Length: 119
Image (cartoon, rainbow, N blue to C red; front, side, top):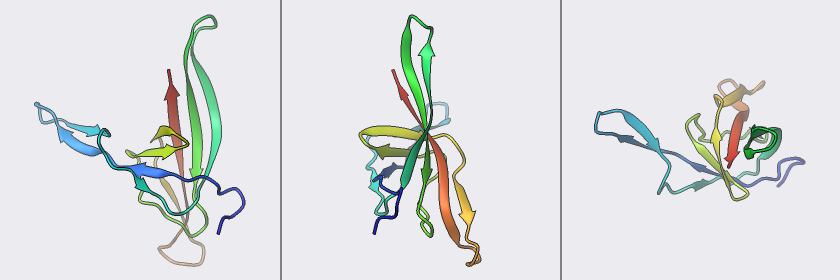
């Protein structure tokens, strides 16, 4: 059942952790199978910024706020990417799990800030 405002379908991409020749760990998102999320979420725009000067706009950076329905937690971490509406957005905040007021150790809902860079 859809609740008002929770209308977006997403999938989550968890990165592969790959060591380079110097044993530094890199996060790689290529060839990672996205995991669809069954529950609808709310994904609302927060800001949009043009990159470049007045005459030469070379891109935009958009941020969005992801919020789950009450009682829904997701397997989402601050290094993950979210697929939504043909875009791949990166999580740029800590994933905030708000405590449930009635259930000890329960999650009321989850919030995170996502970024999409174009250009």
